[in-house]
Length: 269
Image 1 (cartoon, rainbow, N blue to C red):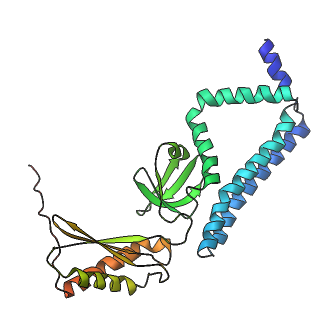
Image 2: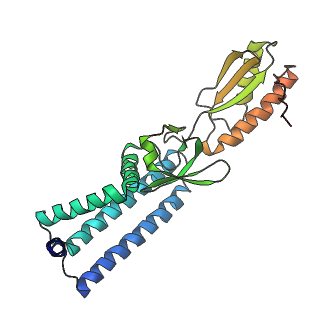
Image 3: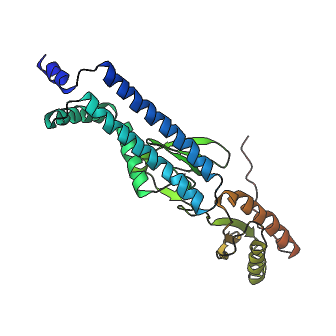
């Protein structure tokens, strides 16, 4: 009974005016968050390059600020603003989060860290736990990706504590694409490197200000060529790799190069 009376003393008695103020704060916060999450991506869709990515990255930060302001305005309406009451309330909330919402709280804290440290932002292409896709939404608890197969994936921010976050473009409008070619070892490697470099140089998707590289590695079964180049926009990476693959194979066939082949392994009946 004593604990219940102490808890009751923490909260103010609510009247019609207080309830209306709370409803107004809640409604205003919801409308502002919805407006921000719709308006900023709409504006960003009409921009290009770094301006688009910077505007998308601001969206979760503004949403978090709106939530903090709404909570800051609501707490004085519900609680008597004294040090003793605030300590008691924060202790109760912390205890509940520690036992009942440990994983959820971990993701929320990781979400705040992600907004501050920016291991990923809206528009980045990242890989987490073998899942690769474009960041479309950075929420308070999860980051949402759209994979190359157009699948929507929600990944908890808590993966920051345990998994490596591979960021292909890290806020830049372009990322490096790698196209692989596997050739029979008996060929003119110098000529092949030149041909593959020309294939990349003549691609309609190529961003000319970044370098082109052809990396050659000898393997027991043949020669492995890795053609590295940058498309104009990160969203063009798959069209770019497909273009380099198709035109590269055509150029190598005209050169008379034989491709490496590994015999298929028969499946047991």
